[in-house]
Length: 486
Ligand SMILES: [Zn+2]
Ligand SMILES: [Zn+2]
Ligand SMILES: [Zn+2]
Image (cartoon, rainbow, N blue to C red; front, side):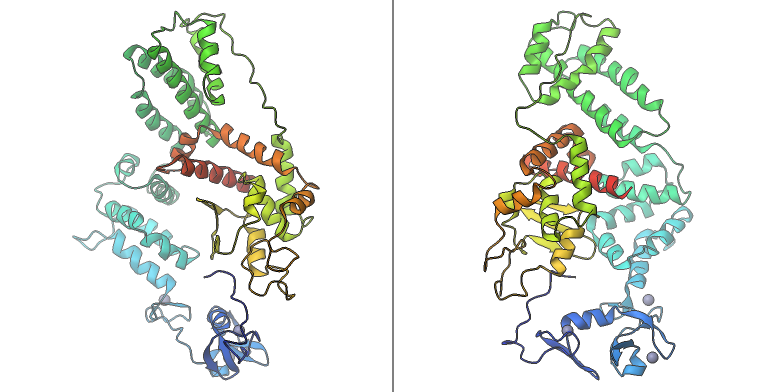
């Protein structure tokens, strides 16, 4: 699926499409006239019941009504060679759902025996019945997914531990694990507790001294893990915060070690120096210090000064939420401004960069909308993608002659130019201050956890800081999207 339609081009294609009336390349001559590639594509996907009673794909047109091939005389290969159903075909022979079924069987059967393990049978069935089989095919054909399923197919017994050992990205592993649990092939377990335990084991290796490692281990075991074990289900926020608290505690212990200070020697000025000397996330040591005090490891008089607010005004969390709500779910602003507002509000982008976006930077496909801003690229999860989709379908301001070939996403009123930052800013002011919103967003992102932790939680292996930042923006976007949909 594609970018927004190309412009109607009467010079290049003088004969208009018989269906949409626009000038595009005619790819088929059907009984109702020449059909452009967009209408052809749409025809292959039109489903319903024909006046003759036939149910299936209705590619033809009779008096403007969709009709079946037999009634309309349209010739089109839409018969799946495997199941016989009428459907869009993959490589001209199988429907997407048969293609998916073939792939699943290939991957999940043991190559030595040709048999799929009994516990995998329901999983195979679940994978085959994915709602959007074409997305399913795309997903499963990714090398890491195929490899993971192949490994699973030859695993002697399937257990949580076995899944943990299989190589592959966590996202794939967790998705498959979810299916196995859903279909009774594995018992349910609290994934976040397990993930934290595994992560913490690795984190302990970063402690510089044995003595401090012992302290960190006790903090993890008797404070963080114990708290998680007391919960019925551990929320994502607790998981991320526990990782953050662990990281900060370890950094603090390592700093003490580097400065030759033991915990019993720790004094207020050391603590103040450490806090003043690094990122604001260091204040999360305020979880470790009270625990260490209770355990009589440090001077009970130590205090942590309350976090000082920055000087630039920024939106508070609730103002931020209210603004997102208005932008995502109301028509108060025109669709173009809503699309721009989301990039500022949720992704913390600068207005001046947003207005310069072109359609080369935005990709709208079936189920994903991605936006590239500078070197960063991110996906807009639903429902944050809605305004951008609407904009792609009808970019606006192009019905006039002002934008004959404009590629700007945010087209302005004057010919060939994008909208002005100042006027967008003042229109958005009705809902929020763009600067305060951007700062508020960045602030929320840092609260979700140190960037490396967020990236790690998502299974990213970023090579640059910049990509870390995208990771956290995506988490925030998914979080916002989840909250908005709830
Ligand atoms: Zn057409
Ligand atoms: Zn018919
Ligand atoms: Zn089929």
